[in-house]
Image (cartoon, rainbow, N blue to C red; front, side, top):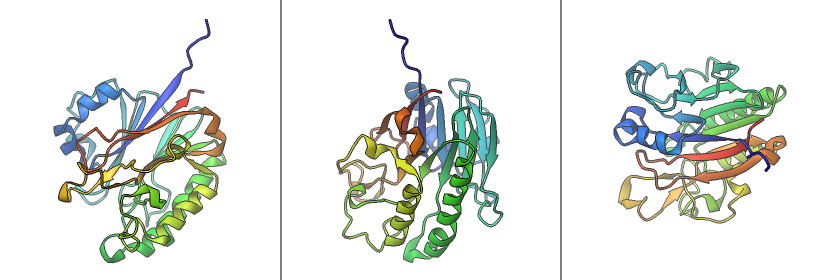
Length: 261
């Protein structure tokens, strides 16, 4: 009998406040999903603020909190011991908001990211597309020189019209401007794969919904949370999925399964 293929399950979730997510069932979700690695964005907390919780599965925790209290922030919880973990992209101008964590494993670098929102009236669009997106792409490509890269998180962009419910009315809104979409295209064209689209070509699959007007119940949403992988990892990609039924945030978890090295 052939040995069962060993897979790693990786999850990414913008929890929009990890303390609020805990109150809304995060620990139960972790026990049920049982990922090998879970990456959080928009934690809005310091590690010590949740240190006494009984996290399931004996996860090692790595946090990158913003200098501004209660704002932004990322974390990686992993059952697989990483070889090394670093925070940020090595640019003081861009690393003050706790938006990037890099974890090196045997077969790949894992990068979780909470991409800046371009904000109302696109006040931060230039910063986001001309500085952040460029720096992030270069950061991934630099890591890729060492070994393949998996990146995940809230990229704050719906890439194609199929990735949001109302594309025509959102072309000048943050998250669906041509500048943001082109930047994401450039990232993929530099050698990365949008994993979800390897398995699902159709529409109606979203990872974020406004709290307004019952948008989630009506599935009027956006797909702005992603897993991307270096093209060389494509043969090891076994599944990619979205968990729209998991509550606790205005985002839902997304994930992949890859063949273990």
